[in-house]
Image (tube, rainbow, N blue to C red; front, side):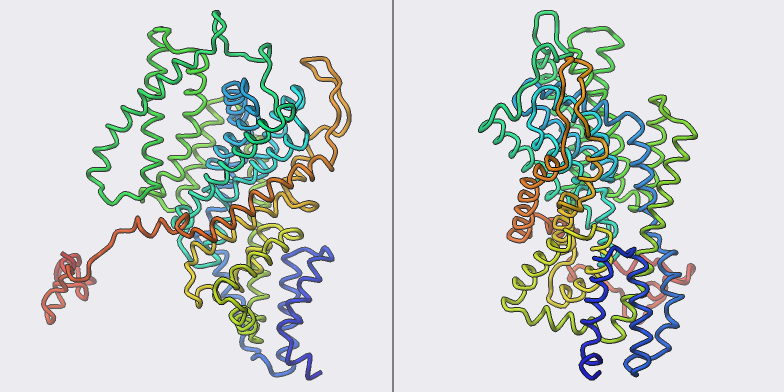
Length: 560
């Protein structure tokens, strides 16, 4: 009994892991463990009964948390976009653009996955859309099954690291940091990860051409009568739009000298999109004919996602909206896009809202369970046990980071990112903060690591989503008339393995080069304390202390 009392915290934590591995619902496993061990601790005088009286207020604090409102907004936006036809248009157009080169279809999947990630933020929407549209085409033209399934599953998980990501919202909330800063920190690693996927496809296409063949001539749609594809006019359009948008944005950047990198990227992209759209629309209305069909198609298909990216990320980065407000505007923009494409219906809205409600309730219940667990765990000094355990590791900060990365990677085999975020992040965050580790960088490191949970066999959700839409039986292709062999679960599992290694490589890069994330710090406005004038010490009416009295002075006069 003495051993049990002295080691109640580790026993409680191990018991939780056992419950989860046995398949009990996460929210109820957390809450049940918290209540059970809280009562045991009270019985042995290890915890005061009054501590449980804080539970109602903590639960009320969860459901009144404005930050978590971003979760239903972004979920609704992703579900509406999934049914708006945007993914189909993007995949068809980008596939035709890159298809004639070896590995082009797989590259198109990665690029569209990154663009969907920057608009939807939902893994299921990306994986299912690309699985339904791209997988049959890749199988039709002889792509290796493992490469095809792996690139679709991995590209879908980009939604978890490229903003606006639900993972980053939850991590920011759990670590007590700004969602905007978390978005800024994750932008470069997310884009680099997409780049590594493309690099892998290029290497495979070069080493084993039969695994990633080019699109045959008969499958190329946008071809001019002379046999060319009209890429020259697309190149000219891109150059003109780039030059014009560069000079038009210089005035904005000149007036706003302290513009962060992410804001520059978003503003430049939107300016480029507006210029390209005006040129393409003028070419169509005036029937000038100097733009090829594929050039027009690329412009008109790219503008809606660029508009949504600005509506969500742009308004957040330039300070016009909070992440919650950005999510609300994104949801409205997705509804407008569905209406514009003629895809909107009340049944679609009902389905999307029901799914959004279920997911939001799922998140809140896990968070409530996590709160009950953490209250009892901290009540029996479990946080001190975790702190001593991790801070006593050999290697100091590096030892802590390596062990945390390995632990997260291992747990990702069995738990999804919501469970990981609500169970281990509240325990690891305070230790990292005490060690002086930047929590935004730490959060992005965990996000990249937790992203592997979606492609880990056998429980990766992206693999389940792809399995649900991949052909389970041999079938006859409707275009070529050939029999296409089914995609086995083994193909999907083995196809994900190379991309798991790529994601682990990205974890190592974030570990070794923190500047990939912490660049957001250099973008902050620096204030020299020597330039601050606090006014005359006794004249409170004209300074900060008099700010509450509207008639006594200017609240801003203290800072000149």
